[in-house]
Length: 439
Image 1 (tube, rainbow, N blue to C red):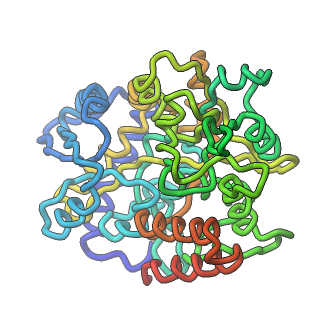
Image 2: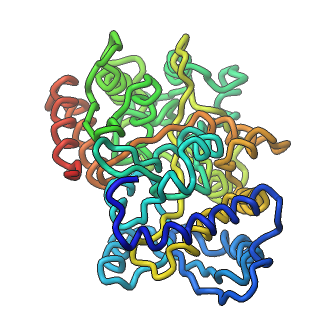
């Protein structure tokens, strides 16, 4: 821990004591902080953009364990305005003590968060506690202080939704396990009318604007190759670099992705005239939809009679890497908080097994802790989510909206013949480099 400010030094002792005590709680050695006497609980506010109803019971449990140390309240913010509102609030000094962070926010908000030193919770302890995708919140950039940007509490992996009736109609009994198989299935599952218009699609890939999660689906294809998008050790953009691989993974991913929207190819199954991909799936006209685990309830709500199932996303045949994309939610402590010690303890409180399990069951998503994943689940749908959670990967996006715009232009420039694949990837890399913050 280098160059600690006097402010950090003052709080280090406080935080260490509180976190060590919190870890004893999580280990089940003591039931909570109620044994601490003579202290006045402080009021802490946390902001997030997940529904407040998901946290009511959990926060009640956290407060019950820590009633003599802090009282925590959760404020739900609009997802559409969360980032801008949070940035303004933190800049004015009126923001929350704790705020929700996702991987695409780390680079932009890391300097607003109190970097938890590894002296308090070691890197080894973090890696032992959480599945691999949570490493996105470990800050270990060359020539900078190292530590934990935020404490993860929830994982939402991308899975494959598949329409069983459509598959059954052509005699397919299971979802594809590999991408070559997926492509073959899509060809058989896609139907066109006499005019050549797609009336039923085997796969929603190749376009951008009408494909939900297009940015993350494309990221998933690249990450499955084992290639990084951004090197977390120095923040270099390695997107579009071959490294030790024979085939450049981004070029390969872009070629595969865009092939589904090319009318001259047999894999043609999607175009920009079709509806939103999830709506098309819910309407029974799309055979396979790649979406987040959290979308399951929305799909059921859209069409309660839809006969569908879920599976892990296809993988590259004979590859040693099994991966999907995952969105991780974590709690960061604001540097502006008047109660940094209690705030960090509150963030770590979500690591408690009973607290995390209760939250995961409420939102119907898998846990982010290894020991809870190892316990498994008897719920068939959750078992797929659990496996996908372990395989989940992410990357340090400079800004999700900017990345989305860059990927959209890259994909559409190939689809509509404005650029070849190599040029589109090269331009995308240059734009990503321009978006990276200076350190």
